[in-house]
Image 1: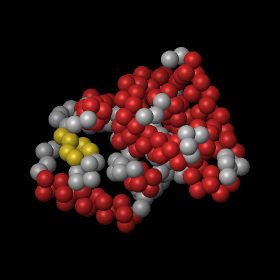
Image 2: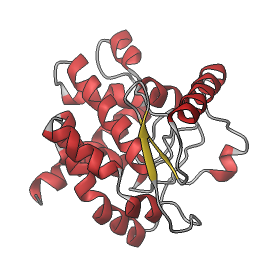
Image 3: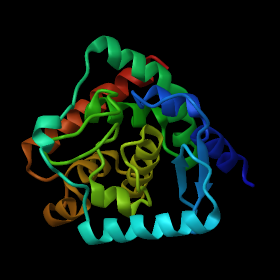
Image 4: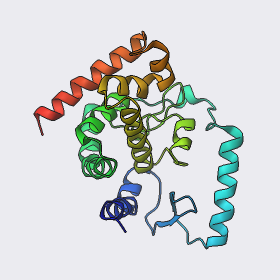
Length: 220
């Protein structure tokens, strides 16, 4: 197995991080399995391959039919920011995981940290009014396209977000400004306007990410 893949698997199999970001989950063994598509899943009970296949089939069918995660009372449950104290604590815990995942996908970890900070303030439970989820604020459809079926899990969310960011960088020839615009507004909007869309939110987002990115570069 490729060294980088081994590192990524080792990170995903860490029960400590899973428990740290899952309040109310009792301590115990965390089991993992890889489905036929190579996607890694977590469970707290041993599961045989037949059951795994049935569960995965039901999950995929459910996602395909709904094409999004239920948004019942999502505005009431929306949590985008945390206090500076908790933000710093989350950032400290996540740092080594962000570095490893970024290295696997070939993206500057300082850029990924800047995106996470701009998107969620390092709050793994963040949910926007529009339905974006987690650290990197993945929309359910985008998460599904990245092969992520549990975007609420912090590591799954990071993997899906970094993978998507890598795709945007590749699609726009490593033009950071356009890649960030596409991450925020979607690649179709960037193509439509032939550059950064004239959206105030997108332009503010780009400035915010670049500010954080410069901060991490200076302090690395």
